[in-house]
Length: 339
Image 1: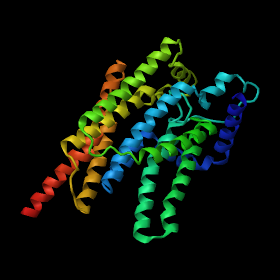
Image 2: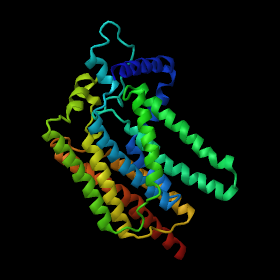
Image 3: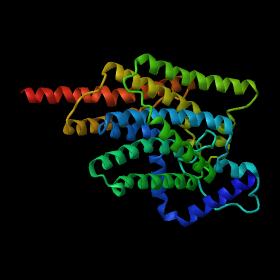
Image 4: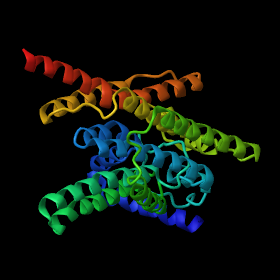
């Protein structure tokens, strides 16, 4: 792997030098590809266009990110920003590269979570859109357009991750392929109409399954905090190390979102039936609500409290989008019609 990693570093250097003028673009793309964006941006936008597609997006995002976490624990992938210093291979010839605020993620690097979750989640979106276009136009060319955009998006997200030194090229390729397969498989098994017990049980299985795997590997004297130590050592700035990029943050986000999805479907089975104008209003209000929920500062000490509050934060996401906001919009628009 040493040769693969070395070539990956030189590819990253070439990208940074040749596309220096597009730096803001790559940083924007990497934020769009963040797994968190699937929950906070893609989910509400999709939900208010197609309820089933929105539920599928949240379902696929949670499962694919959880699987990505498990694979990272098992594969021990390096990240370029720490491997450059750790390897000791660049003492005589240092690559001309720089780090960014999004570079210093603390989990292992393989496969890329950004690429994997983006591939899985956006497959749900483009396949739904492609099917809709074909049903309306019967044009193969027009219905294929979303898939072309999908490929371009995956390539852009992958390049952005290599550009900022968060991943090696083979890691984003592995993440994209795995995410595509997951998107195809999981989008056919959307848990609509399932009882609350299903989501509670599924969320618990994911949570305790990951904790048991972590404990088992630790019992085998495999240190799963190795990547956190390396990230702290080789990150250019201490403030770029954030607890919300740690593996357990992903775990609590996924389990919280699934439990919230179950609660939303339990409290309002079938969702609210709204015309297009109230849907657009619900989308706008939901987006503002999620923006402020995401910005809520959480105490980082003790870490157990941070993870508990992080879990609660993502339980709220489906409730805000599926129950609270559309319910309030329905209430006020109905009153207005009666008046």
